[in-house]
Length: 610
DNA sequence: CTAGGGTTAG
Image (cartoon, rainbow, N blue to C red):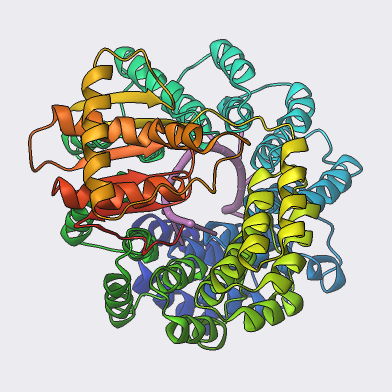
């Protein structure tokens, strides 16, 4: 039985991922004329795929004189496993047109998985329809992948219908459904389902915790990881840890992140690439860019995500030159940048107003790397052009790009119009912005300021009037302040704090010194039509100021004061924080809803761009 | 011989 023997040999090759022996065997089969045995060739196909030799597998697949369902399922699965779901879907149509084969249950599972990873819900629903009218309509494995696909597309309700039709549910079905609810923020349903899972293994916990992190619920995710540890669930692989590292990043709580890092080290997973990647990102998001660099430099292997994480981190913290330096090193190391890398790089340019460099990078992305620019790339480029005063060029691009600009893009260009006093263009941009978000007070504020500075008083007062008719429901602003291991939260206008008197006293003292240095409160961003003094009083009680004062009063001189704010820092507070950093000679780092600000020696890393 | 669940960068 030579064929059986060869199959056994191939199995060993797959097990040991042995490329050389696989190729030797392949040559052997050709010499002996064994390639006509489809069973053997299918196995060979699978071994090549498992050895990550997708190109070789594809060539073999193309050369096969005959292909059956197994050949197709194997090659489609190989594309999925190489993270090429688009190729899975584009390779599928010839299955019928060339080989007259209809999909079987294995092929359906691969197609559904590909749609899930792409979030291609339309295509996914088509496949679902075809599956239902196929002879395999009751297959539980395909149903599990459908549950997962709907979960990934954010439609857990559709997934639930499929889930309920699965006769014998196994862990794959349960985890897909739990994850679907959790990542959509449907916490109650995910917890209810989790409580009913027969076996709560690491997979199930990870599905729940990672889903909550993805829905933005980092606090509950931490609660669950504590519970999971108490239940002595053994963390035999690190996937759940990357979720929890990500949760610390979302909260921007450095001390918490350090503790999670400690756990990662204790469990021995620091050398795992995607865990280190998550740590790099976490430290960057917690504004400790030095720690991010430290983790990055200790990595023995780095992939495109590692490089991109540190590049994006540098860019967000205003270190444009550092980002470019890292990019050059990345290319020298033979790592191909992807679309995310370019988002970081163009973002870095817009931070420091490097227009030519930004244009070059955009061009290089398309021409050297064949990456189709996304809306996000255009947004970064438009930001850069607008802020540097190339308003006509920006408008030309916005009118010719293949995307509808979103609201932040129009808003960025509108403020560029204010900066460069282009009232005419501002009116056009404001029209677009208001059609997308008619109730937005800041648009009217900006518009009225632009009119006022162009001497168009009538228009200005009209905008102000529009503003007053709006029912403004503003989210209350709050700031967390961190120094060392201490933290404290402040709401805007908070007046019941035990250290109220000291905070007020310090802010007053600082106010006197700031005014001596020429500071004049900028009340143009205040919504309500109130007296000027009242406006100044409101500015005085913005949460970030209270937080800074508290930090200054309580921390050891020389320590960095870190603040995380839920809203964007207003223009006046930005000016104030710059001054304070100079007066008290302290570094203040603020992460607001939009970006990072490192205030030091009277300057900010954002280059006054926010 | 082929399929399904949990992970990192915007």
